[in-house]
Image 1 (cartoon, helix red, strand yellow):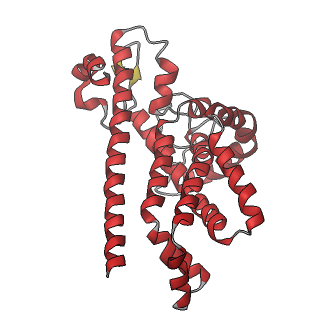
Image 2 (image 1 turned 120 degrees about the vertical axis):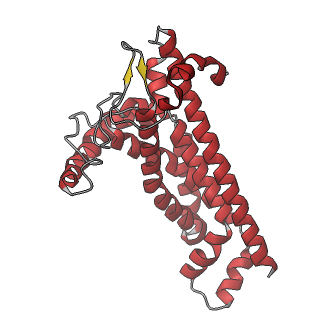
Image 3 (image 1 turned 90 degrees about the vertical axis):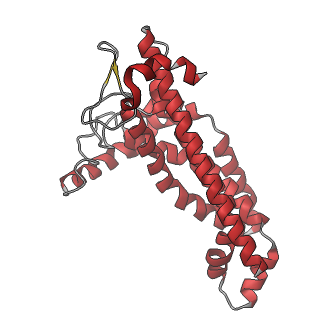
Length: 286
């Protein structure tokens, strides 16, 4: 459906629709459309969210599965699952009224100093808007949203590993930390990778919370301290306002690109999972 419906935009702009350009181009008045700024916004916010969420998720999951006392494991696990079930609009409202003024704006002021470091001017160019709405804000809100999902699945993966694996490692003289890092995490690698990919998929496609905090503005900058768009947010914010056929089909092509990126990343992830499974099977049979 997306392929057929976006035909007019594909014929008009061709491959240039998705290629990086020196200037951002998305102008409904002149009917000049390119998806690169939204691809950039989506990838930057999603990858930055993973950088923040994955270490936190692994740490919490390992604590819940291997280190926490029994009386604490249940309540904390329940809280993690509750956070994973909160609607994204709640995260968006919380981000606007609490997180942006209390944390993101002060953090942005600190990061603006990095804009004077050679090689970092492009990413940390300031100043950040007074509201705090920016790619950075969207990234951190996304990180908070996907952390419970990755944590819950990773915890279940670690708990599903046979006790024999733990006992064998400890019997050979490994410490508790060595057993976790060198035995359990590698053994559950395919499941952990699956959890990370699921979190990435949510980050790529998240619409409401991102739309509320990303700023929804074409500032012509690659800085994470500036407002921007993601592919999902531009479709959500402009689709009902689009009246010209080319504008509508361009938005549909943005949706098609988002679908293609998500599909590609999932194929790569499944390939990596299969490689990890084969490696673990070979190691177990050796």
